[in-house]
Image (cartoon, rainbow, N blue to C red; front, side, top):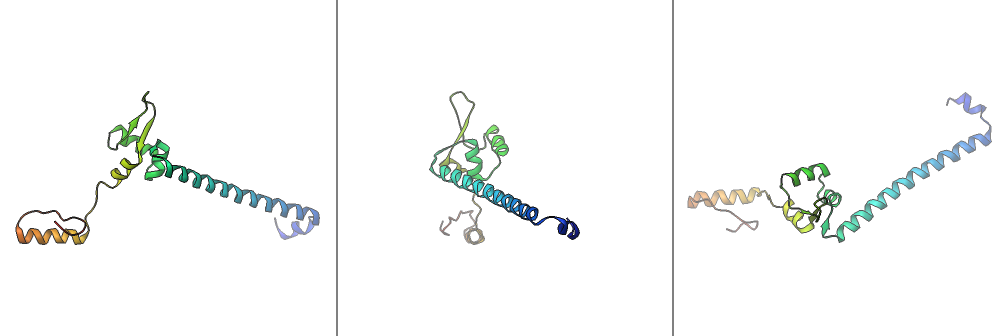
Length: 132
């Protein structure tokens, strides 16, 4: 709205427009707050569960549901099926182990292994602490 049209609007209508804009902004902010509260509720409930649904597992791992379905289909992730075979469940501890099962060695560990190999001529594996 340009300045000329705004000057022609009666004062009571300007007030109504301002109030409507403020109410709209409040409504948008309230919706955002409610969405955030729902997410906090979901995360809190997720923390108390041992058996996770597909939705829970997606939230827990950060993977999409479609990717989880693919992993289940190829049996690349530990999972359980309901008695009818329709629902898929995951054990929280097993998901943690699965997510952490391919650890990458630090440069320090690689260098320690290389040094041991150079000295002994045998391949050795160095643990996290740098010991054999």
